[in-house]
Image (tube, rainbow, N blue to C red; front, side):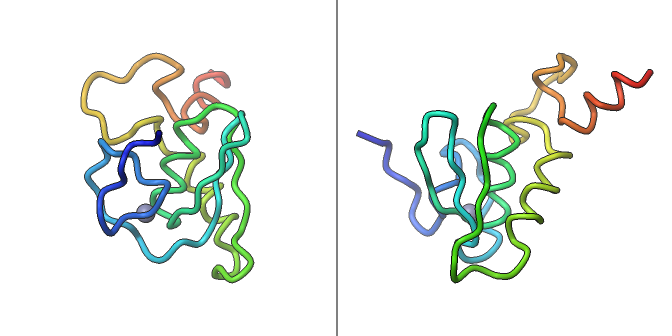
Amino acid sequence: MPAALPAGRCGAAHPDDPTPCGGPAAVTIADSHGAVVGGCEHHAARMLASLDGARVAPLPAGPAGAAVRVFTAADTLRPFCWIDGPLTLPSQLSRAENRDRDRR
Ligand SMILES: [Zn+2]
């Protein structure tokens, strides 16, 4: 049974992420096992950045370009970015940071 979601937040909001939604549900995020949740752009980008093999898709009635904005934002977000602490391992850095490291 899934954990209860905090009231007033979308399905992509991690229970430990204290931030509020950035708007209405705009996209879906599918994890590598096929589980799908709807989310606002803010939490969907954070979830996409945190899950290996996750995919984003637009909601049919969602705002135009939402999936592209989520995909682009997730590229620069660190996995589980709401957790404090030293972040130095490749698995803790954003995809963009890892690409920059690989070029050096
Ligand atoms: Zn949200």
